[in-house]
Each structure stands twice: as structure tokens, then as C-alpha cells.
Image: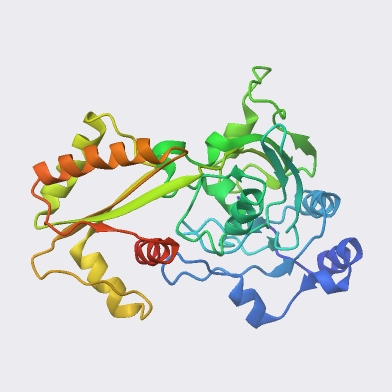
Length: 334
């Protein structure tokens, strides 16, 4: 498709819609917003805008649609698939000002949130109410909920709880034409019409711009246990994973780490530290969660029996406190 360039008339109209303080032409800033974590690719937009509400997004999209100008939604730029790169130039539309948690519904276990909210911030805020938002991408401390929706992010706890799409009830979306739609309903069961919500999740901003989401929450697990198991063989570690499920245990997280990846992480991330035997080739980071200590200990007993049967090393590390858990997860996320 042959998109039109952004000219001075379009810039003037954008400033009229958003105000001068929300339209950016500085070359260095455009370059900054022209890359994410996808290798060293750089595709800056011709102009950057930062709307403050859904109506402003709709007005920008109406203008761009009529003028045949490309628009690229931009979140926190932590993605690895190039979703926020302005491949066709045009308008880069940052959603960073959409940073509010609008409502936490404790009775119905739901949260209404804007796309610029950082994932970890959302998790911590709902946890204060005894609720749990499980999708847990590695970049949770910096990525936006909108990016999680666009990329259908998962993370280590997808094993038990699923990925982002499994927590989305309803979306407010601005279509390329500028029309504002709601894709679902704020109910657990909604069988009316097309499933537009799931169509939007994972579409990487190609079908519309998400400006608000209603997400499902769970009761916050009261307890979790974390162990680190080392193996002299990566094959044995992988075989142990399937055997854990066969034993009837579903961990809240089960992550495989090969020796080379651990070594590289410790080499380049000074905060990452771990004592490893020279013979260690792979590790499994295994977490179980729930509300009853006795049940978690029984699950760990089953898991330990399985990994021992698959020739794990003798020293299984039990994370004793939250600080040790965070240190282990820090290495894995990095």
C-alpha cells in the first residue's frame, strides 16, 4: 500500500486535535521511538503523537484514514517482534499517557485498565485487594498492558494460568476509520456474536488501537514454594518436565534454563549471581502455589521424587524467603 507522507498541513491538524505539547517532531526523539528490543532495527515515525484519551485517538485515526497516512501504535517498546516499529513512517501513536487503573471490582474479580499501565504495577495494585493477575512476561517491570494484549504475552505462569487472552473480557478499541467499538462484555460467559475480543488480542496493533481493557482476576494464592533443580544432562531435565505432569502435579511455573544461557546472563548482568557446579548442564526452576501448606509440600515431594528419578544433582535449592525467590526469578527473567 502506498501511504502518503506527513506534511505541514497534517502536522497543523494534529496540533489542533491534540495541542502543541502532544505532537513531537524532534529527530532524536523520533529515533528513540523508532526501535524496540527487536535486534538493532530502527524505523522512526515521521511524527510522534501522545493522545490523552480515546476521543483524541479516534480523531487522529480519522485524520490519518482520510489522508492515507500510516499509523503505528507504540507502547513501552519492550517487544521482540517489531510490533511498535513504524515500518511505513507516518504517525507514531504513543499510548504512554493512558496510564490509569480505572476500577478494581473486588466483588466480580475484574479490573478496568488503560493500555499504558505497567504490568507489574497492575499486579501489585490488585494484590493489595487479595486479587491476582497471572500473565507474567519477563519484562513485567517495564512493559505495558496494551503491549501484552497486542502480543498475547504469557510468561512463566502461563503453564498453570494461561496467557493474556485467557484474562480478557472486553476491550475498547479505536478502528483504523476512527470508529470506537467495544468487543465483548464484562461477564465470564458471553456467547453473543463474533469473538472480536480474541481477534484483537495478539493482532499486534494491525486491526485497531486498544484504549481500555476489562480483565479477569483470580483470588491471590496465599502461598508459593520455589525450588531450583540442577542436572548434569539437559536431556534428563527435559524428560523430568513431562514426568512431573504425569505424576499429577501442575506447577504454577516450570522454567528450563540451559548452562550457556545462565553463564551469559551472569557474565553480562552484574546483579545476576549463582553458584554452579562445573558439571551442571541445565536447571529447572519450579514453583507451586496455593492456599494450603500441606498440599504444596505434598506436591513438592512428588516433584522431588520425579527429578531424583531423572538423575538430578543432589543439592536441590529451596528458596527460603522472598528475597531469594526474587533473586532466582531475576536470573530467569534476564
